[in-house]
Amino acid sequence: MASPPASYQPTTESLLEVDKTFYDKLAANPEDRELVERFVLPIRSGRAWEVPAGYLCRVITPDGPQCGDFNVWNRHNPRERLWAARTRQLQSAHVTRYDRLWSTLPYMRPLVTITNDSLSWYGEDEDGARVHDLLGSRCDPYINRILTNEDFDFHCHSNLTRAVLPYGLTEFDVHDVLNIFTVTGLNDQDQYYMKPSPAKAGDFFEFFAEQDLLCALSNCPAGDLSIPFWGPDATDPIDVCRPLAVEVYRPPRQVTDGWSPPPCSAYGGLHGLTLR
Image (cartoon, rainbow, N blue to C red):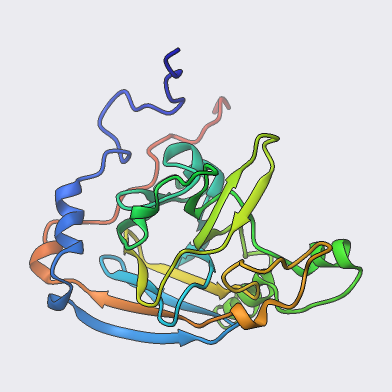
């Protein structure tokens, strides 16, 4: 039996259409880029940073497998931020090259477009799992308290909360994440599961900033997810925690000539109200 048609199919040209030639040029010849920032996130830490519109950003596993929880906002308006649920609908529950991360209503436009992914080879494994997921939320101390009756302050939610404080944001601004380098899926009972990350030293996930961005990343305290963090077999996975690195690049000007940030949704915004 043929699969039913996807729910979200554009009837006219839209931002869902990706100019692959443009993004291929951005991904090509990395030696021609200008490195403008590089930093390393130690284990169980978080950090926020800015990426100007039209720049590239790369998240790297410098020493081997390690998962990271990613948040992103419009730098000038934190109400516009990653909408994980809509991105799952428009793109996929797991994202890779040419996929976009979409922003919340009423803005409804791309925040980033993925230009390169060294784990794109992973595809779908024998369990139906894939890499770089929008299915799971971040680990947090509130669920930890429910599951273990203990406090632990260095979950991804806490790492992200500390990371954004210098930018005037709080834990209320921290939102559902993109789990980078994380392998996940849904089982036959539609339950979420995680598997060890397949990343090796030097693997990376790269994106193009479609707007001026504020990004934040948590170096997950569960490391590469090869050791249970909760449950009867749980132990402290600190031995499988490794650093993450971030690099920000300015691409060659000739590649981005003619490009401009995508507009907000053109919907008039009346929601059926009658103006008098």
